[in-house]
Amino acid sequence: MLNDIRTLLWIEWKRLKVEGAYWLQLIGFDPDSSLAYRIYVAIFWMFWVFTVWSFAVDQAYRISLALPSDTVQSLLGYAPEVILGLQLLYLVRVLRESPLKLSAPEVSYVATSPASRGAIGLIVIVRRLLVPILLFSLLSCLISMLLAWSTSPDGVGFIGLRSLLLTIPLAALSAVFAWTIALLKLRTQSRIVRLLFWLIPPLIGVAARLVPAVGLWVGTLWVTAVQTPLSGTVVVAVLAVLLTALVLFIWVGNGVHMAVVADDSAMFARLQRLGLFGRLYAGEVIARIQRQHRLARKKRLRLSMPEQGNEFSTLLSRMVLSWVRLLPGTMVRPILRGLMLASAMALTVSVSGWQTPQTWLIVLLTLIYSRPVELIAAFREDVSLPFVRQFLPLNPLVIFASGALLPILFMSIGALTPVLVQVPDYPLAAVLLVSLVVCALGLGQALENVVPRIVFHRYIPYEYTVFVAGILIIGTGVLFRSLMMGIVAAAVVVAVLALLLANSRS
Image (tube, rainbow, N blue to C red; front, side):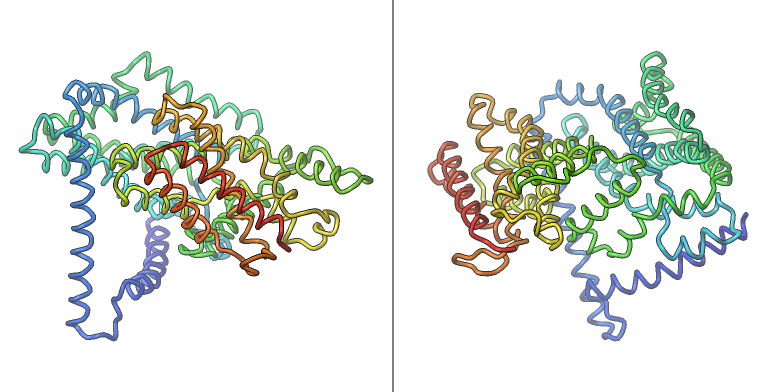
């Protein structure tokens, strides 16, 4: 066991050296450059990190000034339940899809080796969770400082540091617990037993309700760290529980069959080949891979295309087929996408104010880098595959509308909740604005896949469309200080984009 861990750590170290050299060169650390230049680059990045962290702390301080002391106490009181909710959400996620995933080289060389399965799982969990736990700990540090500023302004720095150091083992413990349950589910092939694992999250919630001292102890401990210093006994106890959880995880991992892990890692291995930048910027490629993987794993496909019919009946059947076969994802994903995008933008506007240009720049960047690929999944396949396009000799706008109508509807429903919170007095205006913006996002992505016959005569990148359309819509609304003028501008933008798409060729 220890020899296997040592061997796997050596392989991981070799991989990290290669990736580390690549990333160091990417940020300017060229090994062939002079020492003075490398010192300059190091100072630059230290200054950049310090500036970004100072900005984050300043935003936390500004938010804390707007929070009454009663609200702070209420937030601290609800913190244990919120933390338990996050733990249960993560547990549901790992139960839904096994977290033990291997890259293509690992499937070929590590999974087929006689190495201990528990050792492989230990290396994978450390690699997969190290960066997320560190980022989550930094976020915890900011939140604890935000909540402590009104009550302990002099010791807020120590409170943030205490919260950061405590969050690392607590988050690791929660993740190891969830992974252990997921590996137990992976060990059994009985469908009935695997379904029974879905009873665990609600049972944990009920147990936490009945015995709060046990179910909410992680959140309670975090709140205690915000309010008072922790004793050394508590820290040692947390580390001992974490060590015990790791031992249990390794023991459960030893019973996992690597053939099952390799099969579950098929999509993950394909995505890993894209590299980090590919996974950040190739959202459409990732969505297509995930779509293919979900269809390939379905044992029974519902519905089928009619053997006879005209163009419109074929188009209608195509829309229903592509939507029904991937339920409930085709309904849930657009709703969640709209909810998350609108919530992020509403939070940005409420914190920074709608008068500042920096606020709207952040909103535009959010829309650019979080493109809703669900809106044009069917359209992209219809116009990019010649053997499909020959059966749909219709206008590109008609093809887009048939495939994007339902995703636009569901994404608009998801986005309406945070928008209505921002403008509760204008529900109809909120519905119109959200619907038009979602339509514009879908049309902007569609224009990347066709060539307009008027004005441009070339593919129009989605980023350009969002940037120009966003400036027109936001600029009009801010200039006239009118929500209705922003809606009119959005309607004009949608009409222009629809005209370009209607007069285009694939």
